[in-house]
Length: 301
Image (cartoon, rainbow, N blue to C red; front, side):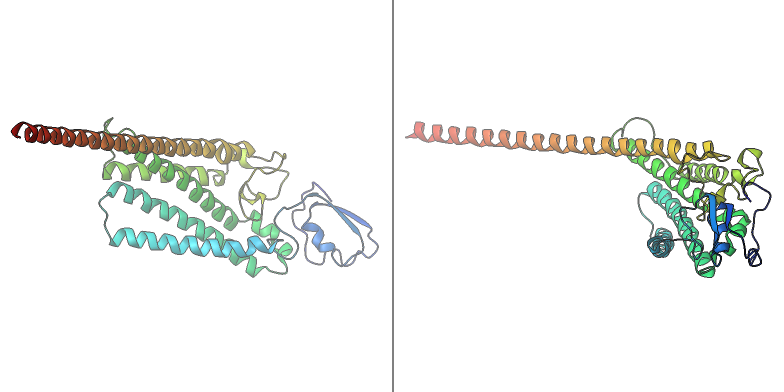
């Protein structure tokens, strides 16, 4: 029963097959329909996250997504409210941090959505796996997750570039103005939307005729992570984003803050040396004054 047009096994499909001894299916979740039978079940694809009862076979991710999701969403709402009510002098940085908070809040929505689905289907997830991973809701929250992560990375890169320019190269070129900052943030959001929702436009490159799920339905968490040597449709796109692009941003951010640290260290040493030189000059001046006073006293005597 592998590699055929059957994408979903109806509930109770094997109930009448009492003498069946072995079945080969596409996924391990399809084998969950055999849990009351004595037959062996072989499968081609093993889901790394889910089991028959739950979207998460381990309790750690099941609990952590609620904690991280709630903190992300509440933290984002707090930061946005704070930035709107209390105006800061550094308007440029405040604008970028505001957009960063919004993108982080989207990640909270994604995680809470996963946790909600897990609660709804707890104990019988295998009955909903096909509708979930091939449905529109999985694609949407997967796109939201990718949008959130990429906008956050690009926004942190922009913040790092602005700090690098103002601290390391303060006299080279003009600094960002609020209007230009808003435009750059809008461009980042536009790029993020294009990257996240492009696989949902029906492009043949992202469609795999041998798999029942969508591009974002490769895993139950609706992320097209390239974690195995398997090469499904669109795997180059995933590698380009999650590995090449994000690693390039990481290298830039790390390099920028290293340059800022070096600049701060050299500046502090120069200030310390200048302070030491001033102290030496002051001591020499005091010494000369004392010598003059001593010389005047000895001549008068």
